[in-house]
Length: 419
Figure 1 (cartoon, rainbow, N blue to C red):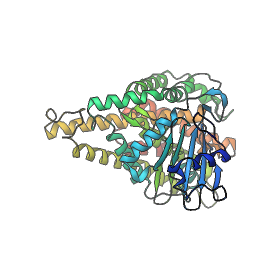
Figure 2: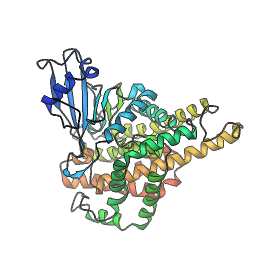
Figure 3: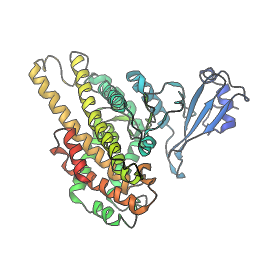
Figure 4: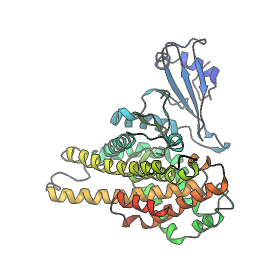
């Protein structure tokens, strides 16, 4: 079988593909048909995902389709997204190798990535949060990943020539950026056939979002920043479903929405999804486990993640202040006092950006097209709606009032006061 042009793979043709690709077959001890166990596990919205286990190793094959898988061919989607995903996995992996799975092979024609299989007990972080599992290194690992992936792809480290070259390359991922623009910054604020919510319990709040002028002003500002600010190579979809975890491992996956955008979009997406997990906990409480201690752990994790990120990002800045970065030239910002002022202003703005984007992501997960399992797995509609309403009200407040928060601790206090 020839793979000279794009062909959607199935389990049988995947065996042929692996046989013809030494970079893959060498990882699993060859590709004899009898030895391979292949399982299609793509439960996401967009792609085929195969787990391949051979006699002496394993790997994952991810293939992009030219449409949105969960909807079908009626919603076309460029398979070129696989190129940007593979490029970002390799770039972020070089910067934070402990927290990004290794890419073994990329085939642009086939829109196919072969990479490390994150074997059990790795699970999707969102599922762990629903189950009430604490992860002691989560804040440490995620802050490390975000600090390195964002700092080293920004003008704090790049010169402007290199930065513009990289920005230009990633402009090609425009279709997935436009999808984000639609589902995060547009559809929740208008009548759309794609929107849904827990009806009839949330009919009033969904309508209120569409009629809130102050909210629309703020989301317009965030949309402009998302479209116009090429600050760093961001993951672009960094929610708790894009992280796999064990008790001592944290791995960031699925950066197919990656592009050069505002740092706060990644930080906010992640923190916003932790806040959603917090508000969902009452729906998962059971007799003998009211989840109060777990909710406190989530809040500690939110606070520790930002505080550690802040500390590490500034440390990288200090270590590289005389390096190639051209955002703040060393012969201009050569005084410790002025550099400190610049850093304080930068981080204050980044916190506010992150809170705004996080709030927008929260809102869209409750009244937009794609919801989160944290709430969807609460079986009783009325109970789910109570949790969602609390999260939505907090998200609206955070979006409109984010600039009043001076530190992440104040945000955590506001979350506690919401309940």
